[in-house]
Amino acid sequence: MACSSLVKLNVASSSWIAGQQSFNSRSGSAARFPNRRVTVIRAGSYTDELIKTAKSIASPGRGILAIDESNATCGKRLASIGLDNTETNRQAYRQLLLTTPGLGEYISGAILFEETLYQSTTDGKKFVDCLRDENIVPGIKVDKGLDGLASRSAEFYNQGARFAKWRTVVSIPCGPSALAVKEAAWGLARYAAISQDNGLVPIVEPEILLDGDHPIERTLEVAEKVWAEVFYYLAENNVTFEGILLKPSMVTPGAEHKEKASPDTIANYTLTMLRRRVPPAVPGIMFLSGGQSEVEATLNLNAMNQSPNPWHVSFSYARALQNTVLKTWQGRPENVEAAQKSLLVRAKANSSAQLGKYSAQGESEEAKKGMFVKGYTY
Ligand code: 13P
Image 1 (cartoon, rainbow, N blue to C red):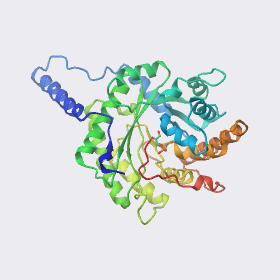
Image 2: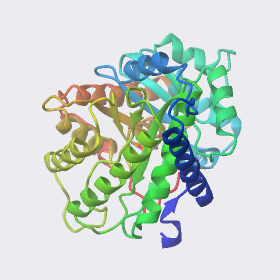
Image 3: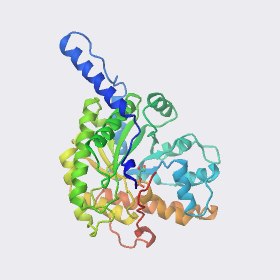
Image 4: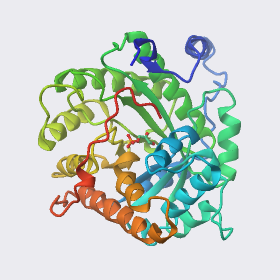
C-alpha cells in the first residue's frame, strides 16, 4: 500500500482547524460571560433512546452482522463466486442474509449500505422490517464525509436506521504520523456527535490495519495512541459515552510478522489496551475481523471473554461471518437454505464466543481459511 494512503480520511483537514477555533471561542466566551447561555453543541433530545439502542445491541450472546460493503466491495464478494455485480444480485445476496430465520437469537444489529437500507425482499417486505421482526437493530454506513452528514443521518433515521458506522483506516507501516492520528480521531468524534444529534448510535471505528511485519508490541503502542486521541476528541465534542459503540481491530502482530500470536496472547494485549483507554461507561466493544479467518476471529473473541469485562465484548464481523455463506450459496436459489444455515452456524459460534463458551471442534476447513488481503480497501 502506498504511504500516501496512510490514513483514509473523510474529512477535510480544514474542518479540524475550524472545529478547534469554534471550541476555543465557545469556551472563551463562557469564561468571560458566566451568565450568558453557552451554545449547546448537542441538544441531547435522543439521549435516552441512544442509551437504550446501544444496550440492546450490546446484549448478552449477541453481536453485529456487518454487510455494509459499498457496491464496489460487494462486487468483489459476488465475483468470488462468479456472479456479476448487478443490483439484482446484490439484493438477492442481502435478502438471503437478512431473512435467515432465527438470526435474532445471535445477531443484535446489522450494518447496511445505503442501497440495502432502502431495499425490500422480492415479496415486497422492507429489509428494515425483516430485521425488526427478528429484534435486530438496523444500522447504516455513513462514512462518506462530514458534509451533509446531519441531514443524511436524519433521513436514515426516518428510514428506520438506529445506529451508524464510520470507519477510518490507520496504517502502521506508513507511520502513522501524529497529525494523521489527530485527524482520524477528530473526524470520528465529529461524526459521533452528529450521529447522536440525529438519533443514531455511532459505531466509532478507527481500523488499525493488519498490514505490516511489526510485532504485537508495536500494534499495542499505535492502538493506545489512536484510542487516546479518539476519546479525547469524543469528550471535547460532548459525545455521550453511554450511547456509542466501538469497533476496534484486535491487537495482533502485523500480518507479515514472522511469528503468529495465540488467541490468549491477542486477548491479553487487546484487553490491556482497552482497559487502559476505554471508560466503562461505553456499553459495547464490537470487534472487526480485519482479514482473520472465521475460526481465528471467533477463537480470539472467545479468549477475550474468559473473565468478566467492564463492557460487552462482542463482534461486528463482515468477512468472518460471510465467507462460508458465500461459498455455500454460489448464487444458486437451491442453495439459499443451506447458506442461511451456514450463517447461523457462524453467528451461533460467535454468540458462544461472546459468552466465552466456544469450542472450535468440528469447524470446517473453509472456516479456517485466512482472508487477509494486503492493502485491502472496503
Ligand atoms: P471485517 O470484519 O471484514 O474486517 O469488517 C470490517 C467492517 O468495518 C465492516 O463493517
